[in-house]
Length: 228
Image 1 (cartoon, rainbow, N blue to C red):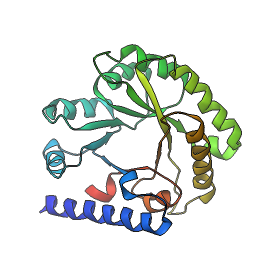
Image 2: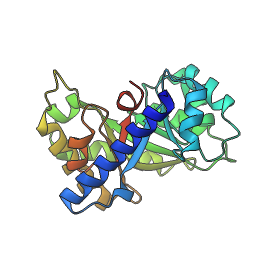
Image 3: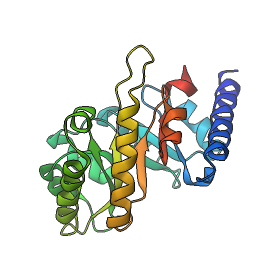
Image 4: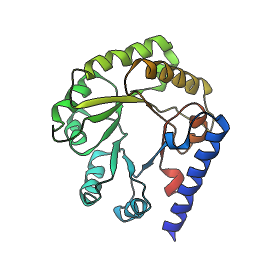
């Protein structure tokens, strides 16, 4: 029964993506990636999601993620995204087992991720996380400069590939600060013209994914909306 409910919820989210895409009349629904956040979910349930051809899965906690990744290793099409806070002692496991890392904030993390990434694997896709406080307290030029500076470092790290940025706006009592979304979109649009392959804006969760798509998100991170 629960599997059927989850299937219906995913279908509804996909329908919303299509509807909003038509509304803004600029983005094809194919250009908006649905990342299903599977933290705290059993592997038996994740297998059901995989069986419906949803292969982009996100995790927040490395130890929990590793158990799932190992149990599901026979599913070669899974694309694992790490979206949680990065501790230096966890970078080795992120580099080894994930294809994407959304929450990179500094040079030290980049160097460690590159150090531990095997040459046998394709480059680890990197998103630079910009915090809400950074967006509120700095102008667009300063934030763009920060990302450009990190890009120069990544260009010297052959096992990493810069793909875009992640923003995680805080939502208080369902109130959305539009300025954060507007500014995020502006920064992303500036940088995608300047940086090669900078095509991913990871913005939007279960609480704000509709608004995020309207403001240019190309990847939404949905967990509670599916599993709760």
